[in-house]
Image 1 (cartoon, rainbow, N blue to C red):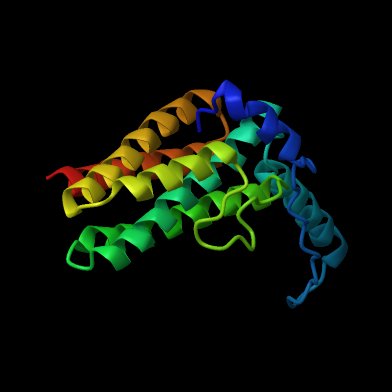
Image 2: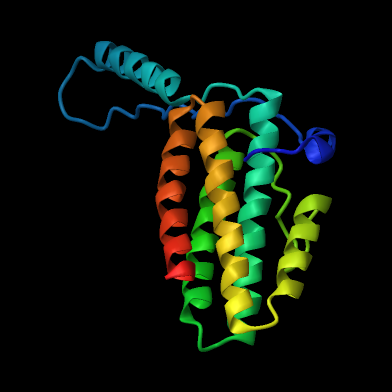
Length: 199
């Protein structure tokens, strides 16, 4: 996500980088019938080592790491806001439906954080609570602005437009294919959410 100068230093200080996570090779147990176990075991171990190297993620830069940390909290802003607006405006089904999608977005980014060994700032945080001051202010401002059904829909549209902008930035920041797959998926979803709030 695109990080403002105002919050970049806070994010960088809060991020713990523990390095790339290697997927451990599975031990070959043999288990099959017939001889040649020594040669077969050597081939199996070699193949597993190559497989491990292929799936070990590339290390992230500090900017990429900070972006993932910001991203997961930005998705939490959307989820928490929509959950609250769904309670306030139960007749607007968009909020309850899209809140479920935002939970999936959070989970996808959390998986990326785990893959790259980055601490999750949303872990254990209650609804409406954020470690990033700018995102906390965004949540509060949008919630306070949603005084009518029309204003609530406008708040949702604001969130999705910001998401689209930040995801487009992330697409230029990352080269890691696992991250880009999540970016592309969420770009499509956020455009659909925006359409739901503005139709």
